[in-house]
Every structure is written in C-alpha cells, then in structure tokens.
Image 1 (cartoon, helix red, strand yellow):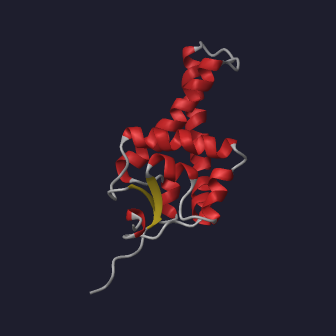
Image 2 (spheres, rainbow, N blue to C red):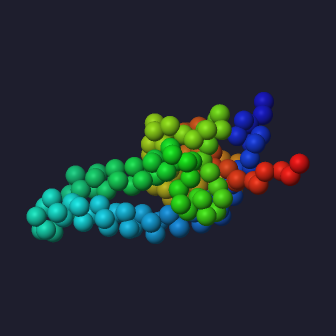
Length: 145
C-alpha cells in the first residue's frame, strides 16, 4: 500500500518546516500585537489583566491566521518563502476543520516537548500530519518537456 502523500511531491524536511515556523512567528507577533490593540480599545485603554477569555481570544486569532492561509492557498507567508505547502490526502488545500484539527494536534506535539515534530526525523510525517490527515510537502518545479 503506497502513501498517497508521497506520490506527487516529497515531504518537506523538518529544517524547512522549522524555518517556516520561525519566519511565521515574526508575523504572528505582529498579528497578536494588533489583536491586543483591538482588545485595548474595547477595554477603554485600560490594561488587560491576563485572564482566560483574553488568552482564548489570542489563541483564536492565532488559529484563524494559520487556518485562513492554509485554506486559501495551502501556505502561510513563511511556507511560501521556503517553498513548502500543506495538502490533504487528495492533494488539495485543507478545509477549515482539517486546519483547526492540525493546529490543535500541532499544539499537542509541542506540549509533548516537541516529540511530535521530532518524529519527522524518523518518518515522513509528524504526529499532527498523521492525526489531521494532512502533510507538508516540498513544492517542486514543474518538469521541462
């Protein structure tokens, strides 16, 4: 039985995935800064105490950032730079449910001391790839005829 993900494009290396994550983290800081500024407006400019609702709000913003890009083009800006893309088993962009499932599983992978990501060193997928039925693949240039 062959793996449908490996037929078209090779899986992205862990180094490329981590590099894209670092690139995206810079953008995420800006997005979360802007989201916090919006929350300050609704709080009449008063400092926002660290609370459950504010943390959930920021987590929602973070998840929506990734899900929006993955749903729209299969790539965040960092992934575009490193020429990698997220695909489903059918080779398409993931749906909203797939995106949120992947993000939740990726968070679990990180909370387990990064073991879900380190798994990629031994297999062509991470834990969250397997659990969400998605993969991050390297975009290869089209072959010349």
